[in-house]
Image 1 (cartoon, rainbow, N blue to C red):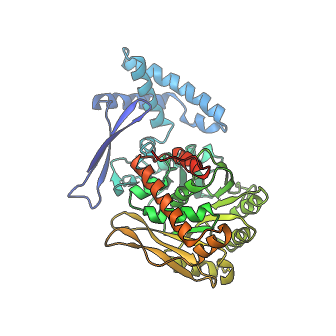
Image 2 (spheres, one colour):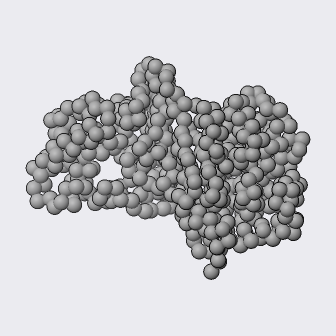
Image 3 (tube, one colour):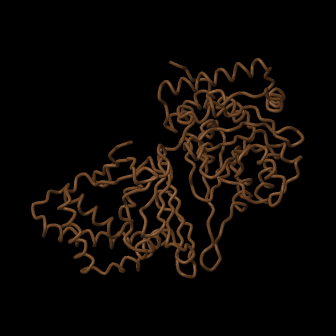
Length: 478
């Protein structure tokens, strides 16, 4: 079905995705290309010798990064000496590759490190030691890998390593852990018997190459016309709420529409775990919540950061997800005081968004919701794995949604359903533009988006510079 190669510390790894008659889902096979089976057998012998020689618990005594690096360097020297005994004529590049391979097997996350380096993967899941690791692939959905973890103790050890690096712990008394890797990947871990089949690790990968609006248009997630309409709303500081189910691409879409922010405004983003990556030319302050320590102290909540952000003179506020009444109230208050707000919420369509906002536990008066301008609904078809913009709706003065654009599943396109009332009226009121001028502006934006796609411009920073040139009147389409 698919085949590609990734390189990790001089180790070449072949990834082969294939279907099988015996399996109900495709298989994701990892094969280290530049280490022969015979060499792997010898390396395993070296690994066992290394374990018997070194006290592997030494590493766990070190609490800060400098001490951890020191012990890793010590282990690197010991491994190098062992390799030279078995492979005396090894050249420097090969030696470096073999040392890295054994270090990751002993001190890192083993073969999970390989999965973390595959840019096509969004999720890596360890359910227990008896079944293989599962991954969620951008192109192929859920896949079963040929990677297994040898024991429940090893899974627990991996969780401990991850937690220790960010000052968290997972124990029988605290069997649930939320953490993140140095790369920004979000990690959740649980211990048996809370997870009854065994210890689990769930890693949601941080997008090194973030989603951009041109990638979404090229992939069919949203149409150029719908993207241009969102761009027009964002340019004119109208607030947008992005909704959808789990894995529908809410945060990815929030990242994509943030491509439209002007460079001369201050942007504050608030997330539980860093997932957003905005163009580097923007005036952007990313902020992240913090869980309390084991004594219950030092926690910083989303609400704390939201209230604090209003004292930072932001022009735009981005919020990872609205979950509670106080967060929603502060956001709506921010809208009323002239801030543009962009956030995500769990709801499957525009009607559900309003119902979620106006009923317990959030329970906001319907009249207040009208300060929100647009709802953009994302959807993932679990059968095909396709992520699509399902609806774009505006909020009427009575708090009810009016769907302007909707996804047609048969044609696989986003179609226009109705003319805007509220958004166009607000634009006419605040900008002085006529309906014809608004229509011409939309056509210009569609032209720019199609030009970027034709030029294959997908990098978040390049798009940021083009949008900045557009705002300053210096953009010239070649």
